[in-house]
Length: 433
Ligand code: S3P
Image 1: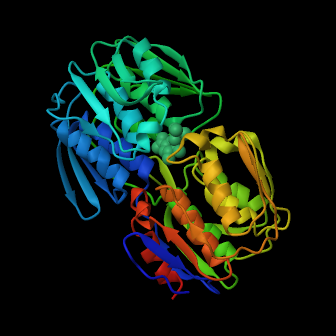
Image 2: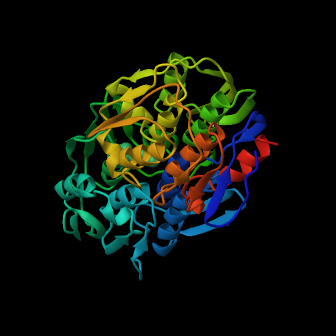
Image 3: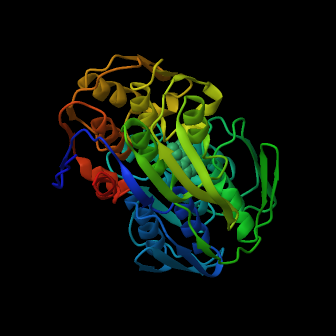
């Protein structure tokens, strides 16, 4: 395979073998949370293997504008905690860039401040729904203005918050986290109930930092006013980034890949379960627990891939992996079907439409549903021009498709991989020799 670089376009050629040992960038979800919680903790929070993603840099930029002292060196970040009452009114708008996590979770912290702040985002983020955080935070007492339809920018006037009991209407870890973070500033106990388990990194980080938090089945309760302690932590590699290499390693015939130190939090490992049930060969080695999070090495080899249907209740745990799983489906015996994934339409792009569009460009047969996709199996993919719509996970999913296609696949606007995985193409080039 040969990949040539330009800022905007990458060409991907079919590969026969992917080989080697690789590391993923630090987990994006965990990095956002420790940066945000570290900023309202007491003392320093040292975050090692902080995500290299542009999204996490957006979080740091917003925190800096709130007066937080941040020291970033290579892949470590130290946040000097300002305490629960120490953030400063920003002189400028807070720019969340492309990052839904930054805007939604930080809204929870801003709701508890005694000043007004405005959060903006890029064109893609400006189209993403914010009512899901506006509703509970307003119920807690914050005053929030948005553009029409509950879209960004958000103007948040915080103040004294009251605790609520909130049943999440959408399966979203960002919304759950926003309410829990706001709960740190409320007078009493805030409860969030989820009907489907979503990633629990906020709960773990709060436990690690000494918050007064309780968990019982799907209910999480946090008591306001408790001091958070700054913490030294190591962020595991991002399993959602590793997913591209898991699928690549399974599709490319003579592959032998090891991915080190991947986060294996059980709320994130549905990708391993799905690949295993569909005939994949991903072995988990050397598991350990660090700062409340599991991590381990993954070994990936090609195998016979059956495909099948992904149960709707698994979808929330796979939400970021569905684009690359859709590509995987085209190379399985039975193809792949999923429903219950309407949330995919309000991600960085409409990922159902954009996956379908690009798979068709590669000559694949795809059926689009309002809440999912069906891709036929045993399909020959042809190299094609891929429109990423500026969506990092689309760029990476179709680079993986290009490895299994005939001819050259051209990924336009490939620089968008910086949003979660700036080293993606470099890593791919390395394992393809
Ligand atoms: C995230 C939660 C998910 C996910 C996103 C990161 C998080 O979003 O898609 O990439 O860190 O909490 P939702 O909460 O909107 O499902």
